[in-house]
Length: 371
View 1 (spheres, helix red, strand yellow):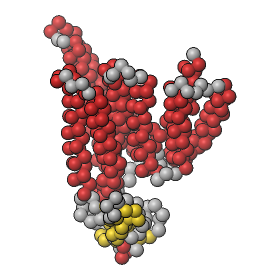
View 2: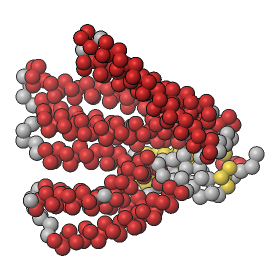
View 3: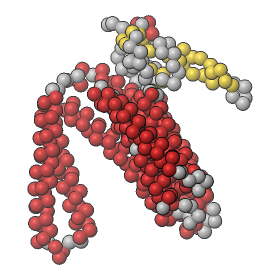
View 4: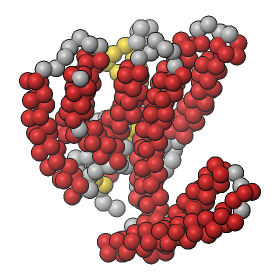
């Protein structure tokens, strides 16, 4: 078997640096080289407070330490993070409710501290999750049954047929359910009926659309659609949870907490997660740096306006308009290039949306500040 190629530099990996060509859960694997490479145990240059130096396994091909790991260690670490998250989440809920339940005076402060610990645990789990995801993606790519090429016309026909099926089934189910509801109107609870109706129609319609898609395009493409839908719903759920937490803190949080500061902090949590995910997928290219700088600039300006320490003038607004034109031209060209080359992921797409409209968001807050 010929030498493998490094996906980052496209240089061949020598055979003596490859531990195995077949996926092995217990062997070390480099996420940058996309191969079971050998590694060397090295000591870090910095020392701890006790005078010891930490050990790290460095890939012998790309010379990266954080990219080389054993896949068998990741599930244990994920289970540990999930267990800690559940325990700390339960403690956080008890802390926030302890004032009403037990009369604890510092329930809010303790709950905020516990929430900070929970956020750190979730952040660590979010940073480590892509390592296991890259390993599973590489294992699936090594399977010969997944390498089935499907034409673009067949994909388009499958998506179109599944969409039409979704509409027809949804309309048919709605017609049947609405007729049954009219007959049994006096016997049913309206809120429960509407909730069950929407859930049933959505489930049946989506299942029918997926079966049509799988029948036309095949099982492999159907699984890829499910994975893409799952990633899309995961991204939406992160933002939805952020806005729900923001609303709960505004309504039920301490009165001394300003709503605008609550919104700014809770809004930046999914922004930070988006930055980390897009960084892991783009490896800090120039557009990532520009987008991150625009988001950081927007946060600094909004923080200064919220603190009433600075009020933008007309010259700043003119600079925003000129800067928005430059941002739209530069990032628009890069966005089209990435879309054509199929290098656009969901986190990077959200990153582009945030960075592109930062000047527009600042302009909106400036107008509110002036009025």
